[in-house]
Image 1 (cartoon, rainbow, N blue to C red):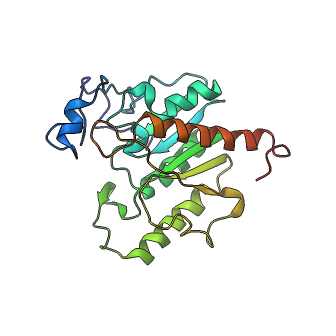
Image 2: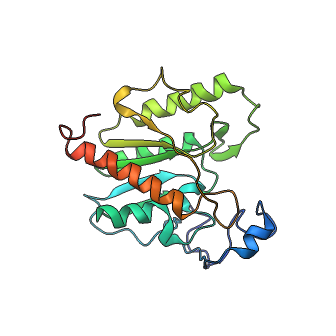
Length: 233
């Protein structure tokens, strides 16, 4: 789970997934996007530099393509902006089309293999599942809202029981009811939701304005961990 085999060692490219003229959500936006984008993956298959030898004080950033930063320059992804803000190495463990099931497994492996202090997870679409060791994006009606939420709550509880400070966010536009988990999540592990303010080149993922908001929200939560009396939860 701490390696994406089909990404490790692939050649550098200026397109990936829906961030192509063929598969993007708005061709006019794609063609007029002004910034250069390059996809380069480390030896573990993540869109990040190689991990440092000392992982004792890093921030683990787990998520799907919104964490990878599809459609964005790598320096404008939220893990990179968070690294700039905090001065701590932020490892980008984003994976395209990653399910919440896989994210929960990934975090458990991080905790078994290392001693993480801070884990930030940006949860994905509730209809995604891990099936036969693969991430599958079902139709939103495949299981129904009740089963989708129940599966998410299961993964959420698993992640928030690990021995680390965990920050939970939800990708934008996942639900029309931001407080749909109000009665089921712990009050001291608040799920952070945010609006999408702009669009990346593919016209689906968010761009740098939203990334800045996300990194600000995460930094504020980290300050609560560091100074609980000054920033009461």
